[in-house]
Image 1: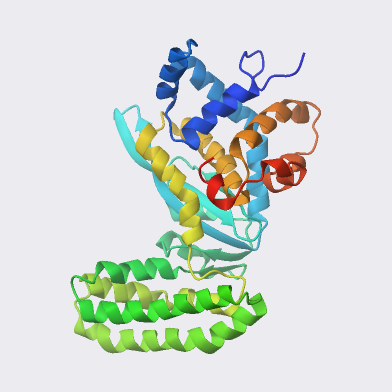
Image 2: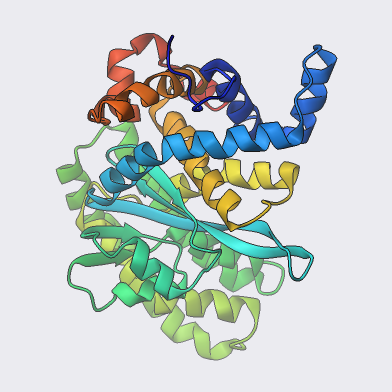
Length: 354
């Protein structure tokens, strides 16, 4: 008899994969899925599905840890975090907790992490304690613990800087438009580099020649004009945000492999936002961590343009044998798996609709 994903369970890999796919890719909560199955003549209780989910996550955890280890071994990460409501049984309501995400830019792998919902600098230190390289973030102050860490180079995101000026347009159009115009010049350069297919070495040289003067000019402009605005006004806050992070915003010009912003990380975290609006909350901290593991697998599939259904079915099929024989998990890593299953490669656009 073939091994099933769940020990002494009756659900096969195809059914479990479909449950996970529908919830974490198509954002359909389990309770809605039970209604669909009922219409098909299959009665599945919420308890049964939740038990299958928990058991499947236990099976997946070693692979999740392997992906996490691989991501943290990269020398260039983008990081972001988002809220995730989790039920607090004592308060009898959902608390706003946080889910973290780290994305290896070159390897196109990522992982989500959940540490009892905390958004503190302590969690940042725990997650990235072994990381060495460049870390790109949105400027959230918790990451500033790396400012004095010689092993980590912290860079910031021009997209976040731009949004602050956009929100201040209604308050001070003249100043906001000038800043936005300068930032737009930086992005225009990036489009030129991409269109001309410049190498990282060429991009680095051109950024220093063309982008650096723009950034220095914007820095001087803030110094000259900040005294004319109220510090607590929207334009004042936008200028303060920009000026206080000018070093982190400038560092991308010294390496042609680095990105001008953290937008790819935000795109990677967007499915969590959509799912959150549909399944509303996680039942407890364990469920939230399990969700982080599934979001990791589905997120890696999006990064690698893998058919998520194919990947989940095959991984759930193989994991019982791999773990039973204590074999290497390397072949199940998304980037390695797709090399052996080229038929499951999807176009970038269609992979997002998998």
